[in-house]
Amino acid sequence: MDITDIRIRKVSADGKLKAYVTVTFDDSFVVHNVKIIEGENGVFIAMPSRKTKSGEYKDVAHPINTSFRTRLQNRILQEYEKEEDAVESTTGESGKY
Image 1 (cartoon, helix red, strand yellow):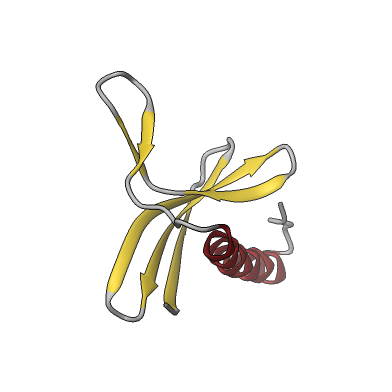
Image 2 (cartoon, rainbow, N blue to C red):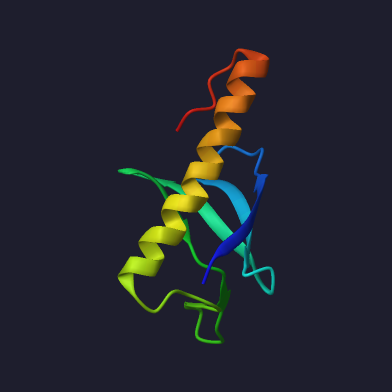
C-alpha cells in the first residue's frame, strides 16, 4: 500500500497539538484527522479517534503492525518538517519542533 498524498493543516493555538493530517493511500482511500502531537521526546502521530460513552477514546482507524505504523509516521513527520522548514525560510522564524 502506497501513501500517495499527505495534507497537513497546522493548528495555530499553543499546545501539544501541532497539526491535523489527511493521508491518502493508493489514490483510493483517505484517512482524515491523524494528529501530530508534541510529546516529551519529540513529535509523534496519533490516529483519529472518537470518545465512547464511557469517556475513553478509541481509534477509528489504525495500522495493525509496527512496521507500517513506523513507515506512516516517518512519512507524515517528514512532510511536517518540510512545511516547518518552508515557514522558517520565508519568515525567518523557527517553526522547528
